[in-house]
Length: 283
Image 1 (cartoon, rainbow, N blue to C red):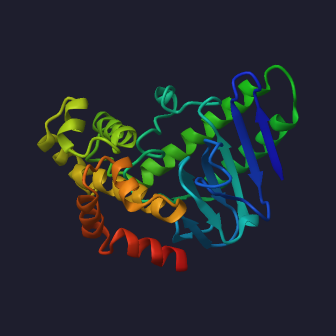
Image 2 (cartoon, helix red, strand yellow):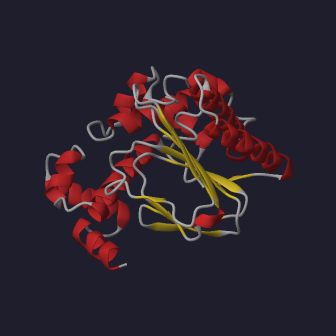
Image 3 (cartoon, rainbow, N blue to C red):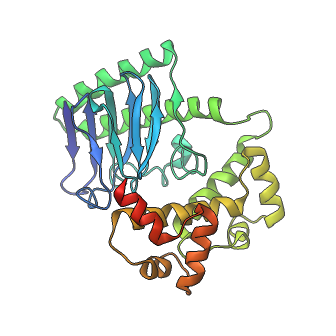
C-alpha cells in the first residue's frame, strides 16, 4: 500500500508505504529531487538493510530513521512500514521545540539507531498507523493538518524511546544534550567548508575543551571525530554513487589539495579513494 499527500501550492509532501514488495531510495539516482526524511518500522522478521553500500542487521520490531541523502535498500521490503516527509510538509529544524529530534534522531552523530519497540509501544504505533491510513484516505480542508499532527506524534514517540535506549540520561541533562544536538546540526550544515572543532565550538559559545568533555558523556567520539566521519561518509557516497573524480570530490568537501584529501581519506578508511571506488563497484 502506498499513500501520499502533496500540497500543490507549498510542495509539502507526506508519504506512507505499508508492506510493499519494492521500496528503496537512491539519493544520487532516481530519488535525488525528492528531499524526504524516512522513518522505517520493521514489522517483519530480522533482515538486512543496505545503507550507502554498507549492510546492517535490521532487527524485528525496531524503528530506523534515515536521512534525505542516504541511499538504502531493504532485503525484504514487504515487512517494512515507512513514513516519508519533506521540509515543506514539516520542518523538524523550525519546529524542534515541538519534537526535539534534530541532532539526535536526524542529523545526529550517533551510529545508526535501531530503536526497539516493546509490546505496548508496538500497539501504540500500530494504532497510529491505522489513523494515518484513515487520514490519507480522507480528503478535506484539514487533511494536511491532521497528517502533520500524526507525524509529530510519531516523531515524539520514537524520539522518547531512542533517548531512553541510547542516552546516559543520568549523566546528560536535556540542556547539555541540546548543545550536542546543535553541534551535530551545525556539522551537517558546514562540514564541507569547516573542518575544525574551534569553528563549531564558537558557534555554540563553548570552548573546544568544554565541548570535548561534553561529548565524552554522550559517546566515545570526540567532536573532531564527528566532523571527520561526516566528511568521510560524504566522500564515500560521492565515490560510490557519482562519477566525480577524487580531485572534484576533494574540492567539494573543502580540501584545496587533492593529495591531502587522499591522505586524509586513507588515514580514516585504510584505503585510497580510487581503491575504495573500485572495491565498491565490484562488490
